[in-house]
Structure formats: structure tokens, C-alpha cells
Image 1 (spheres, rainbow, N blue to C red):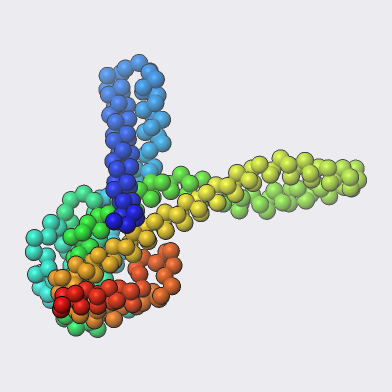
Image 2 (image 1 turned 90 degrees about the horizontal axis):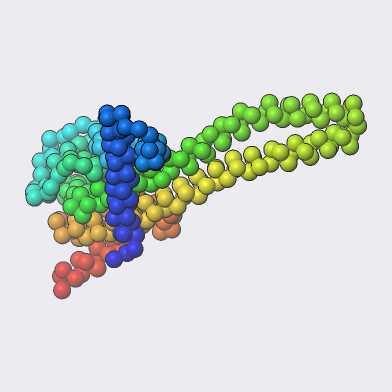
Length: 308
């Protein structure tokens, strides 16, 4: 198994630990408040844990609770009876209550998502895809999305995105504050420094003025360095986490293709993939899908193996 497939389990376990700590600290604080218990080291520690974890926990709710509803609302998803009837045979024995619909887009695309809790899932097809694809092609693409649900890929992606956002909350917050402070303070501070430099140069000479400038620079340098470090830390962390998510996504596309080919046929999957926009042969670290040529090549090998 590719090592990237271990990351969803790691993300899930870390999220579980985060929520256990948050709930435990919340319960302890509520008990202390309810019974008017005297201050203690445990209560102080619980308060720190609660305050520190509140924002990361809040950042995960989108992916753990209502991602289906939010995505449907954002895309103005409309259910289509004919597409539902076409896909229905693929949903037999699937442990999800699947909502199927279309969304207005000129892209040739489809997606499947599910939240972590509950058994609700969403499969959406772009209007352009529904208009252009034959029934066989549309069924193959639907099988690919259903395969993601059967393999748990959509749930795993929710785990990864939730955990990644929890990790990024404070780096993002500090980086954003640093950017705004520097942006808003740059002009006023620059004008004050310039005015002070000119005034000292006129009153005491250039030597004193440059001495003043050097002292001020030494005083401001640590602040600027910390602000820059916050921004760089967030950029690096965001880069790494996005790369991990995209690597997992690309890896799972091959498995979904193979499962969809079993539900329909390799030839139908190859034909369906020919409709989609190819990300190219040189896939970057932030591409969520591998090159279509490689996906087709694997399906042709699968097809050859079935004929032998």
C-alpha cells in the first residue's frame, strides 16, 4: 500500500484526540462551574486546553458535519430524476443515502463528497457533462464517483481536510495579523522615521541622524523578523498540507477507475475519461488527478487481463 494512504488514518486519530481533549476540558470546566469548586491546577489546565483548541475544533466543523449541504448550496445543485434513475443500480448495497444532481458549469466534471458523521453523500454532475456524455459514459463516470464512496475516499478526504485546517488555524491567524499590521503600519512608521531622520540631520548633523536610523532599525528588526517568520511558516505548512492532500487524491483515482471498470467495463471507463479535461503528462503537486493517459493505460491493461 502506498504510504500516502496511511495519512487519512493518522488524520482521523489526531482529530479524535483533539475532540477528546476539547470535550474533556469542557466537561471539567462545566463541572467546576456547576458545583462551585475551588480553583485547582487541573481546572487551570482545562481552561488553557479549552481556549487553545476552540478555534481548531471550530475550523473542522465544515468538513465533519455539513459539507454536503454547504457544497450543494454553493453549487446550486438541482436533482435530476433521469440521472437518478440511471445511477440507481450502482447504489445497491451502498451504505450511504446519496443525493444526486447537476450543477451549472461549462466544465466536463463530476464529484462525490460525504461528511464524516452520518451516512449522507452527494454526487454532482456538471450540466455540460450531462449534455455531452452518452448514457454509457455518464454511467461510467457515476460508477467512478460511487467507487470513491465505496472505498471511503470521500470520508477520508473529509478527515484530511478537517485535520489540515485544524493545523493551519493558528499559523494562518498569526500570518494574517502580521500581514495586516505590517501593511497598515508601514506608511505611518516610514513617515515618522523619515521625519525624525530629517529633523535630527538638520539639528544635530548627519552622523547623529544615521545613528538614530541604525538604532531604530535594530529595534524594529526583531519585530519584522517575527512577522516574516509567521508568514513563511504558514506558507510552508500550507504548501506541505496541500501537497499531501493532492497526493492522496491522485492515488485514489486509480483505485476508483478500476472499481468503476468492474461495475461497467474498462472500455466504458476509457471512453468516459476521454470526455474529461486532461491535466497533462507533467502533473504538479497540487493537481488532484493524475494524467488521463496514465489512467487509460492502466484500464487497457485491466481490459487485456479480462480478455485473457
